[in-house]
Length: 124
Image 1 (cartoon, helix red, strand yellow):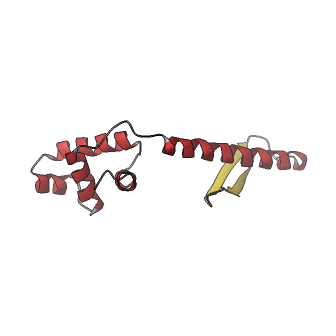
Image 2 (image 1 turned 90 degrees about the vertical axis):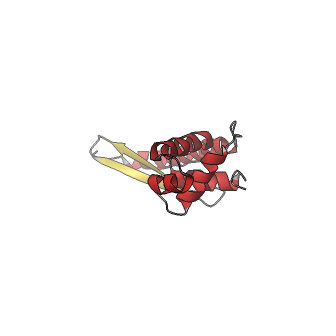
Image 3 (image 1 turned 180 degrees about the vertical axis):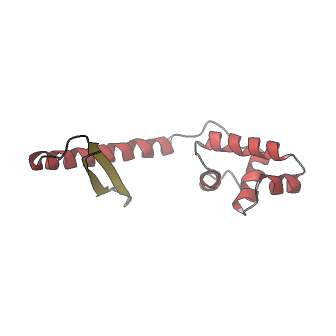
């Protein structure tokens, strides 16, 4: 990377949107900079809208009782083997339940899975 710029804007919901653009050129021409900033804002806004749409897509799966239990214990700070001891199952089984819950909830972390399940009422 030789030159680049970061475009930041605020989404309608108040979230900060940021897009980084880089180039192999030694310098971005000043006449191109405003056009690139505009493109960065458009790109950030579109990316945000697609993300919002994905969150609005209904889930086609329900958490099992064990998946919900594993999420609750993990949210309290227990690791797989601590959860396994509490539920009298193996650590590998806990890991499988957590992975299944994350897949069903379309998230990439255990914490995100817990909060998503909580917001959807799947942990009641």
